[in-house]
Length: 478
Image 1 (cartoon, rainbow, N blue to C red):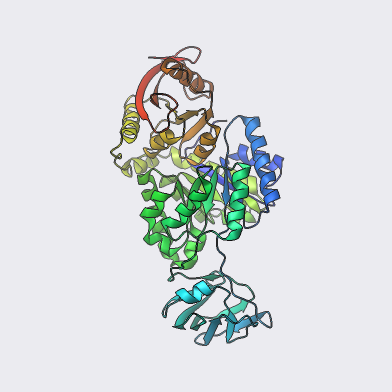
Image 2 (cartoon, helix red, strand yellow):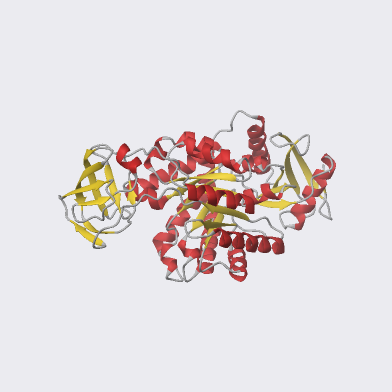
């Protein structure tokens, strides 16, 4: 099944999309990989979903990526004696280590790390920012705050701290258990929530030991200040606009989205744009015009993937949401302006053999107007390097490694085929032509460009470019 767009679609699974028939329909509608949110998914259900996705994958013969999204630390207030209170603007409100149920003047904050890290002047946002406090007096036992924006506050509401650098790991004991269960099940990507620093990513990678790739979710202001280091430590980036928009002024989110997209592309790391892309389609079969423009903006920016959350997980119209995203992607990529935007944003190649080869292959393919750029890749790195260039012709990645093929499901423009490794260079060239011919990328008599590493099968050795003609049966030769 060949997609007619380069940007990928990541669909979240949930109550509205858990059975085989629905996951099959979502894949047919355009989903390239699926997200399992461990905030709402027990281990047995996660394993069931993975098995179902692998069933769909085998029936279509195309690698499908699976991303498990870890919950991360959830910071919450304690309980109130009467279940809820009304906080008034200007009043004093204390957060403390006393476990006694709270009232309109105080409540327990069962997170000593917050009390230890808070400083006067730091903001505290409660219930997704609906209530705002400013710390005026702090100690390890309590924090006296002033209510800047009041409102109703009830038991166990979430706490966000945009100004406070918390000395806590991005992974809780629950996350560690979820991570190990996901790795044993054989998922492809791990999304790490509430990353504050590169060390958070490196800590997860020590546990993962190469069994999956790591996607850092950027949703904390502290991560913005250390973005370059986090990108370097990660395998991919997710612009998690929901929590980012709670902890930062909303008007900053669009510019940060563009900055992160460009930084990730410059580093050759896939980037996913997430949260509220087609939010109205949870209840409506059609999106708003603003939502269509939002999705289109991510496509124009050259993001690798766009994500559906509740729209596909719990909405009334999951298939329609995926097909809408698919149509928007196709339409934007037909626009002549789209190509000019990608070209204008193309970063200079890194001073490595692999990046130099990828840049040269793109230039040759576009100069000769070739219909496909074919990568033989063991680890997937060759295809990622070529995708960084955002070439005009489609990228066909051929790999003997099913795990590499599934990870490439999130990478811009890559149509991945899992096949037996080539015996030698002649076999590599011939079968590249056959596969591209079979999947409808080239016709007999056309030429293709082939990028690979020699010797074959050794990861990270992208060093060869060949131009070949496709024969009447699809095989290629020089």
